[in-house]
Amino acid sequence: RAGTGMEPALLFFSEEMNQRVKEHLRIESELREALANGELLLYYQPKVSLRTGRIVGAEALLRWRHPVRGLISPGVFIPVAEETGLIMELGNWVIEEACRQIRRWREAGLAMPPVAINLSARQFDRGLPQRMADALERHGVHPGQVMLEITESLLVRGADSVIAIMNELVAMGLALALDDFGTGYSSLAYLKKFPISTLKIDRAFVTGLPHEEDDCAIARAIVTMAQQMRQEIVAEGVETREQMAFLRELGCDQLQGYLFSQPIPAADFERMMGDGHRLALAPPDR
Ligand code: C2E
Ligand code: MG
Ligand code: MG
Ligand code: MG
Image (cartoon, rainbow, N blue to C red; front, side):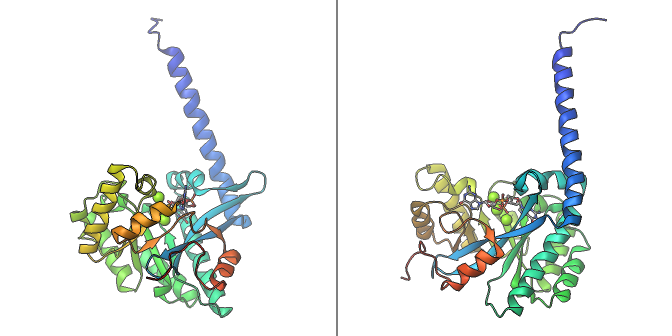
């Protein structure tokens, strides 16, 4: 056989692919068990108002308590679930659990802020509004208590049907936030077509504030245009007081990040809300 000199590389590549496929299959089957065995849980990360320093929302973030490997972050298993289609079941579990948690809080007489649920693009089909309506109804949850976080990949997909589904959700009283904004392809002008009330500036741009000129320019542009479109602006991944100060100057509405709190279990979040809703590092009223 004629040697091309490429066999070793190809072999290596296919072995790597093989490993990757195996790893995905393993994660997928373990994920199915995790769903059945109750190994999944939601953590909550507060969103803080820059104006008042109060917690005005929480984002529900999925965690997997693996019996052997401990707490696994969604960055590892969500992409696998998206590839295999298991994201539907996973996503439905998240919707259900978030509504269940909101009900528990209500039944305990606790005043808790709205909860944001992350949605994968694959969950965004014609059935979504009904699935949301069912979950809200099952737990007696007011739609104002729930927000949905979607990503830009959805906007570039198939505009008309996506807009129709969004409009249905908004008509039900559910607010939509655009997550990881700035990392995708959607221009701000394009955004106007979608009934989105909140933009979340991706952590990638927040990290460089206030020292990286490019990040400052991007953050400023996003905030300015969002304000013109009357959208709320949330900055993700705020870790330093300097970042907070810069974002406040820009006129950002809400902050989320380790400066205030990591994502925490529901019970810890309840305690945090009980401690006067006001975080130690939050800015004073002006
Ligand atoms: P995301 O929705 O953009 O969530 C923000 C991520 O940034 C979270 O990671 C959060 O823990 C992390 N984060 C927040 N503040 C800081 C900070 O100050 N510094 C740093 N370094 N990180 C910060 P997490 O929980 O690992 O989630 C990663 C991604 O997984 C999420 O990004 C979201 O896209 C996805 N995800 C999480 N839960 C769900 C879910 O229930 N459904 C779906 N479809 N996706 C989910
Ligand atoms: Mg999110
Ligand atoms: Mg985000
Ligand atoms: Mg992000």
